[in-house]
Amino acid sequence: MRSLEESREILYVIRTMDVLLGSGVGLEATIHSISGGGYGVISEDFAQLMKNINKGNSLEKELRNLQRKCESDGYKRLINTLLNNVTQNTDIVETLRKQGSRMEEERSEAVKKYIETLSGLPETLLSIGMIGPLIMAILGVVPQLVDPETDITGISGYAGVMNSVVAGGLFLSLLFMFFLGLKTHTKDPGL
Image (cartoon, rainbow, N blue to C red):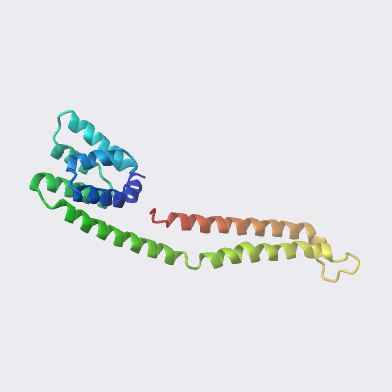
């Protein structure tokens, strides 16, 4: 769950940090701004980082501690970038822009793959959800339409069986539609 939340918010954090650092705001002030909220678990992590810095710990030590806590690759890269800036005074703004661009491409690919997996889903759901119940309803009505005295098919004696078949068929249609929806939900890239 943490990894999903990190990957959902990391691009927004990177873009925000890019704008703030690019406009001349310092690294600690940028981290403090992110810790103010709006970025889920990343804001919580940065708020804890700021508390520990205010207690006297070094930024480098806190970034290393946070690096061990990260679960998603993008968040690990961001913390590594911040750590490199603190220890080696690298160009953080350019690195953040490159990371942001790379993450946008990764998200676009994930969305494209998700759309491709959904391509036949509407037709399948329409077929099962509309045509299946219609066929089952026709099967359920046939025994009531046949006159017992003129019945040459022998269906009327099986009205109870036909009703059970119809009910079972409708239940299976609903169950199949549920599992299709569940499959679609589990393939959601979470963006």
